[in-house]
Image (cartoon, rainbow, N blue to C red; front, side):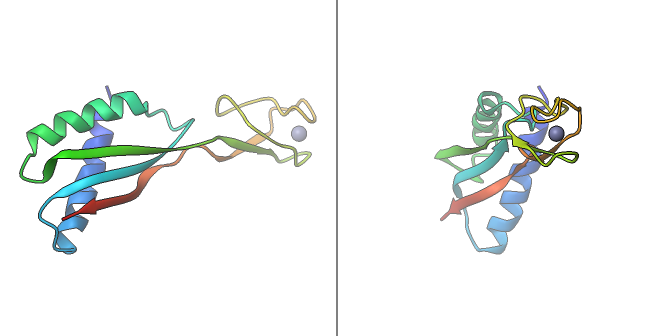
Length: 116
Ligand SMILES: [Zn+2]
């Protein structure tokens, strides 16, 4: 489950920043997760609850995680058609060429977090 490693990295970043802001606990984390980022929100949520328990000096036990799901968008470099792809490499519905360029949908980052 690579979400465990992804979540570990994310929480490390959040915690370092939280300390700089003078927070003693993190109470909420919101992530932007692209539909094609290959990170499953369910698995991320599970990883979060494991870390939350493990690092209870960092996370408030009522801390929650939220996901802002980013829809995937591709734009064809041949004919400029914009469409919603279901995977990274797709056939353009406008010209039928495999020239769709993914412009959104692979994001995996911290959108915001709250601490106290
Ligand atoms: Zn096209």
